[in-house]
Length: 291
Length: 275
Image (cartoon, rainbow over all chains, first blue to last red; front, top):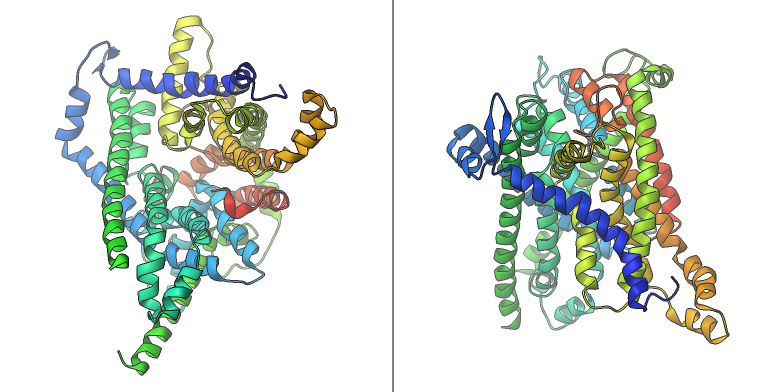
């Protein structure tokens, strides 16, 4: 056990964990994919088949395309705003020398670990008809009747934003702390104004980190379940709740499985596309910097 | 640009930065602060400002069967999944970082892969798979503790691999070499030098694994049966019905558990490096 360099020891060490992943994740995913090609009949539920009809159904029914559209829209919006807000915050945190730094990092990490259900509960207290926001608005005389904030796009959006922000900040903090800021000082000494030095030196170095963070939080937004259910309500349809619904309420496994794989694929494709765009952006920025 | 314009734009930039920082703090902390605050309200529904403060909701939440049973189930599942995941993940991390065998990067990627699969899809795939097993060999994992523990091990293995690998890479090999040169057997080097040096990484992995498993909702959704749900599912079901100080009190308990785990792990690991 002690000598991990012995190949057999290494296999014995890594084997059990790998076996768990293969049997409890990879194999079930294959099973699920196989089921997505089966046929659903109301009487027998699932019958063996090899058909693409579940996928075709998804892409021909406006309702499900709408669900995907809502999900894509909210995931994209929270990714963009997450980066726009998270980057300056992480930049400030990376450059600051306050002794509160580790406390601030804990304050960022803490909401993440508290979990999505608790955070959604907190936003409910803020946004509900008898919640804090309405009490403030009525108290200030800005409105006489409480406003319906819950079960709207806005409620889900603010919930998602608070879910993704810790991931953006902590990912970018790691990236920004790895950047050699003497390069920035050098650019400044050579006469570049702060803005130019930032845009041509720091930003190109940070772009790979930004794109990594964007992919992570976009995926989180696409897959959000608790936030959508609690802040969006039963009527609000996003992909993850829709997948669950097909299995738990409608017992339509083939279609639910197809939904699951559409969700996974669309997320992956969008992430890859975004990375390519950002990489190209990075290339232009690098060329700019070299000029 | 004139000098004045430059100074002006610098001032605007600083103001914008300050505004962003304040807004981010508010967005991050509002939900947690409100949950804790509301759990002390002396009224049976939300009302701002609260008529008074009380501790009775904590007693009320403790008497609410679903929360209590959920708490018990979640604690058991998180404990089991943490033990299993940290054991398997730590062993695997040793091989990944130390063996120098080809293909270890790929294996590490495989072990981290549950992090990128949507949790709802993990839960559903396992549910479907467990039912298939039940049909095939008659072992039903869909509504017992073991099925949940196995499912949550998919969450704890990647966190352990990530944290312990990061810790192992940073360890100084020369101390182990010194021990070996001084005549310690490989087993002795491992138990007396390597393991103690890995302590901080393993403790952090255990604490994070426990938290991640305890708060996870999506993986468990289909693997529980009515009456024996996990804590987050019990809270979700209550919230779909109503929001009041009692459910705030229940979630405050979870907030406190996470806070204490976080403060303990802060002593062992650089928290900015974990995500």
